[in-house]
Figure (cartoon, rainbow, N blue to C red):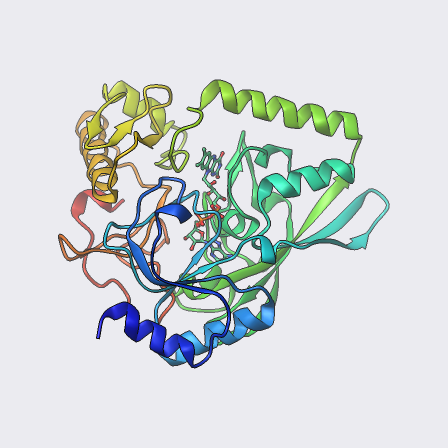
Length: 354
Ligand SMILES: Cc1cc2nc3c(=O)[nH]c(=O)nc-3n(C[C@H](O)[C@H](O)[C@H](O)COP(=O)(O)OP(=O)(O)OC[C@H]3O[C@@H](n4cnc5c(N)ncnc54)[C@H](O)[C@@H]3O)c2cc1C
């Protein structure tokens, strides 16, 4: 029996919602690459999500949490197991507490940052303007501690509701979360020793937002949009900045100094506009993007002695080399996969380890 059929059979025991079987993941990634997941599902409620997660864990079916897919690279071989997409059905926004000058706003993980920013404008709440134009979800933004223009999402987070691998919910204050540059160690927030971060889901986040003047907030949003338009390639498939900035150096500058703007592997290209963007010019494969990433790492290393670490999270395994592809789970060499026992023990190629 094929892998996707086996997954479908197991899934049928505990999942009654919509499911896409053996479905290409390219449509769920802004890089527009990625082979099929055995199954793609779209939970609509916390209860559905909880039953799903516990069922998957009990049946040893791997799972992957996908928000807006704007910070992931999915292999051409696709993903074993189930891709859980938290989207519009998981995007409620509500004020949970009001103080004189601020409001505490609970936002579900599937809510897009752009919808949240629009909502904040409507409600004259300031703080999140810097996220305008980041094409991610709230869950993805918390999991990656998204940031721009010197600000990070963690600065606004008051608390986060997490779901563990048994489908149980936990609330954690910001102080109990482990945020770092473009990363949040969700597993550690629940006391996991390490390596199980991807088993933990962000279900919602409460943001503490100051009351502000609508005109000023709108102005800030316009400024942010303008700066993005001026500094980033528009209208092409990418995952934003591909590499983290090492220390106080800009990854884009290091790549540019290595003379790599415009460098291509297959359909993947270093943007001629912003060197830290890898763009899919139309027919790239995930392999092209991965190989270009490796080439950039090698050339920047040779020139500057700095090993660039991907900001984009690389999910799954690479069947052609048999190696685990790991992104920035914070645990080098671990797969970003939500099932124990599948731990990406294969070492990463030297060049990809920071
Ligand atoms: C044009 C462009 C510009 C960008 N600009 C910026 C920028 O300025 N700053 C910045 O920080 N990023 C930027 N990004 C990257 C990306 O938009 C952010 O990282 C975003 O927060 C990712 O959210 P997502 O929903 O798309 O996550 P996804 O790409 O779907 O997932 C990213 C990671 O988060 C995990 N994840 C997603 N949802 C959850 C959840 N609910 N619970 C647990 N884990 C979860 C996934 O498993 C995966 O490991 C940009 C991307 C693009 C394409």
